[in-house]
Image (cartoon, rainbow, N blue to C red; front, side, top):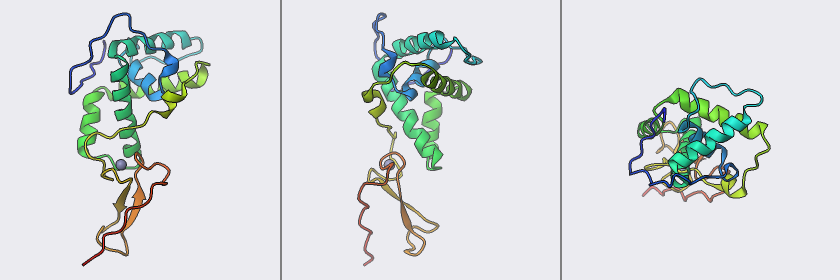
Amino acid sequence: MPATLTAPHPAPVLSPVETVPVSELSNQERAVALYASDMPTRFRMRRDDEAMVHGWIIQGASRLGLQEVHRLAAAAYGYRLLWLADLATADQTRAHERRFPNARRFSKAETTATLFTVKTNVPMSQAAKDRRPQVEGSCPCRGTGWMADAVDPTDPVTAFMIACPVHNRHGLRPAPRPAVAA
Ligand SMILES: [Zn+2]
């Protein structure tokens, strides 16, 4: 495989005949599969390339195994949400770079997966759409769904809570009770 995906634990043993239907993969999972496939990093998707991209997605997913595709995609999705909100920690960025050491290839895989999803009629199962992002290590919200965003978080005038983009994307979880100063 042209790029190596490093995993903190041993990769699952794959049966060579294991195939993953593309309809069971989310867009991020399709991107992870493309990253692990024979797709050239310089590839540019054109009209009539859909069948080739479809084959690469199956190839990459079969190499990784479904469990690993889910794990890598959930972590990549969680990282992307934190990164977009400018909340990713240095540790999380390093973990992302270990998972996908070739940033250019990962970007190409994401673009190609999106083009494939938009341009083809390959369906996406509800289960694939519903799979959740994950944050490795501790999320800045510590699982509460809310985090302080302020110049000085202890200053009641400037401190306010923002919804975690991973654990509370729609801001619907009840806000934690503010700490009462003694
Ligand atoms: Zn969170």
